[in-house]
Length: 482
Ligand code: NAD
Image (cartoon, rainbow, N blue to C red):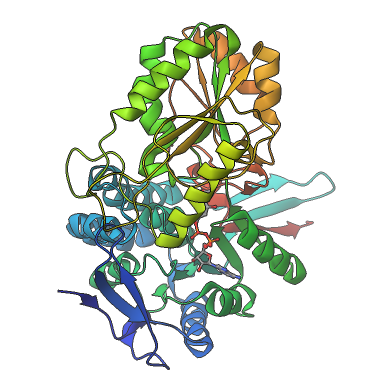
């Protein structure tokens, strides 16, 4: 049975869209149609932004509530999300092929946790501070919610990336229009169902789907929007950033990555390969922060290439709903074409494929690619410089620590990364020298309480932690000269 919505969620109601056009989504693993939602028009964007604007501007509405009152409403929202946890995982994995075992820990578990985290945090932070003026009298420095937020998200972790925006924005007192990617719309409409059941006030959260070029663009530039929170590709991020620059509109950009795993010469090869999946290949390589360039010391190069190859060769590839599956299909046939073209390019650039390189046998439906290791490339190769977004790792030899750090930093991106060593202090000192927004020593697990974001072409601004709440607030100073 397919899941079909014929309405959009605007102003606290399921309302009829202005066009009968649909976005239809299909399964990444079976290619069967899974369902559809209305394709919003510019008029639907106007209605959604209008509802969010009205809710935000209400003199006794959401933005004016005490944080504790918002927390009570957001707790109801969290409860409604938990009740749908399994359905979120089911929809996400069906649409984008994420192994459900991973989906359970991320897409299923994180949304309610992050809503609760920010709802509580907002009650603890000072809203106003009275400071003795450096000139005369006092100044009241207050934080207020930024306003109406356009939240635009990609398909790879659609739930957690939506809630990296929705949760701090709502906790801060903002109102939101959420626009998911067209590949993953069914789980976004489930968020609307949860918001409706939780009786969030009308207009506080609105959900519409539509093409990036028409609906996304209109949303970003809409005069009723005060802030844009975007996660997606660097190319689209540049475009959105330019639009927001022209409008002097605050924007957070979480973009692409090509992060490095710096494997030091004292590494415990078993400890490193045990964590390789989570830090370099999770979600079939369709993750922004993973370490997809593996820098290996020349002194242990052959041994480590073999260890990595043997590990990756064992990863079960298949149905995302099978418990043993580690690598599922890619999100779409177009994504598979891109990944396969990089594998060819890697070979043409002198890379040696030590495992994978083709399509797995016996999986004739769905967008599968074997997990692939390309060894012996240097940092100039396209597979070392460009984001592939598939299960493909480039192995690059280096001479000494300084050389490894120079290679790690020789990138247009700076989002994640890892350092691997048996000496944590040495690992920390290397990590401090890598130009990146986040990095792990002997592992990488996103901490909801710490800022996450990129440098260089990986983005602008931070999500998560108290810094992620501040991204949805602005300051006002009120001078009292007497
Ligand atoms: P994408 O940039 O193609 O699309 C992202 C979203 O932007 C979608 O909702 C899309 O409809 C919308 N969009 C497209 N054009 C637009 C426009 N002109 N105006 C407004 N909105 C527009 O990205 P994708 O293919 O969905 O996702 C993959 C990319 O996301 C990868 O590059 C990945 O690295 C990045 N990503 C980054 C992070 C991070 O936190 N830094 C996390 C996950 C994914």
